[in-house]
Length: 290
Ligand SMILES: C[S@@+](CC[C@H](N)C(=O)[O-])C[C@H]1O[C@@H](n2cnc3c(N)ncnc32)[C@H](O)[C@@H]1O
Image (cartoon, rainbow, N blue to C red; front, side, top):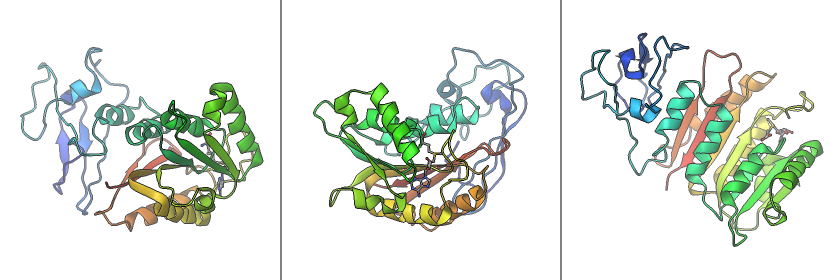
């Protein structure tokens, strides 16, 4: 369903998801496809608990006529095995159906890209939740794997350090290096010639901290350029962009301008947002092809 490229408006019968109201997918006529899913919430009919989102998508909508509402529902929309999104179908559907938060989605996408022993960067440590998630993904028994964390606020680095202290072993914590530095200078904290699998940004202000201290468009742009320069093939730049604070929309526009200029032969850029929830964060993934 997400791979549809025809420049027409498609309407799928809602019975695909066990509901009566229509689910609409609207690709635009531009070279990349933009999908909008309109999902009535709460559903007017219960979806069987034995049906996972993957079960619900097992029928190939482009080839099989829609069943009558009473038919059993099965739709197949799997990504190709070589796609970076392979195996994430359930996750995307969970997000579309309002069952997953943006940060949960980003962590699950990271898990599909990051391997034990990798070097990764948390460009905005904040309270340390992303740093901790990354550490769990890269730490292996041989002591390989590194997480480089940056933040401009000492308070954030202290929170991150405390969270790690209470959550991981001293050996694991030793794999994390924290820097009080602007993320536009992330390349300066890495050992020479280090390639990075993941650079993650969670933009905005420190939750529970000073709301006037936010990430800024100009340094975010420089940081994206820096991340692009150190990312390995098959690596990912991940952003959660919050738009509910002053400068948030401008920052999103900066990110969108940046990704729209990346050549598709080398980069796959995707954006996800729940558009009818006020200030809903925008998820951006910038995947460097292998
Ligand atoms: C939304 S919070 C990050 C949340 C965090 N990732 C977590 O898991 O809790 C954004 C953080 O970005 C930091 N920040 C703002 N500008 C920055 C910059 N130029 N370089 C690095 N960090 C920055 C803020 O101090 C704040 O702690």
